[in-house]
Length: 129
Length: 178
Image 1: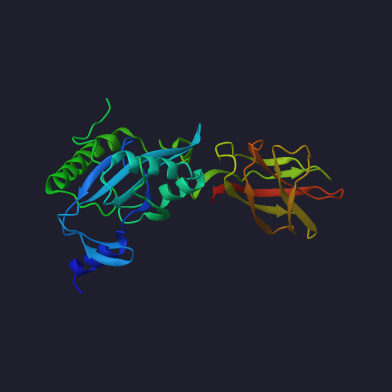
Image 2: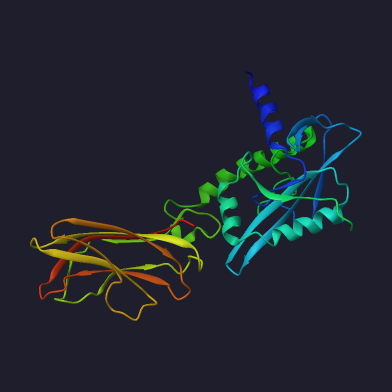
């Protein structure tokens, strides 16, 4: 199997729609939004699908801090979702960030790399604003 | 003068697909940092960066503090003084850390004791013990959760009876593990 095929397989396995992930700080304390290019493969409820240009997917991310004084740690929450509403997504990310402990944030900081991140058992939902 | 990189605000997370323009910007940042590094390296003398100048608060496991000496001393008969002290004040309250202790004892072949005393304790005797024979290296590892009142860990050694005890090489280190 070529390197390119391996990479494609990894992408299918790793992108899970609506599931929030935690990573080291990405460099923005305000909500950052990026449209995911059409043709990207991801998992939606366990099924591998291709993203169509008629149904765009967005990637949201934002940095947070936990702890006080010298015992602080920064981390980033990010999610890919079809929800095109900054306020709804940001509110839910903010709520999830409140549940992240200092130990969890330190662990993420120590273990994150360009390939290593961690999904949380949290889903973004399209709620009424 | 503070160094700057040409594109300081590129935001991306794992599995993002960057555009060719963004990849070019990342490359420009990397190049700028590589160009900066020889200047920084030339201005830092050998040995100028010590472990006390490294901020360990955002990463673990990390060596928080260590202390070592090769001076031979003798403990007074039946007493336990602080023979080596370690500053653990930089470990956040609630964090877990290991204290590693090792000492070489000289003398006869009766039993000696080595232990730790935490700075918040009112006791003058060690709270945790590891025993061994004279002329032997005695090693021990203790695991703690950092309490708010603990700022130092003291290595103590000696004998409970009336004999003195010679203590040679000693090492004390703290390693944050959680």
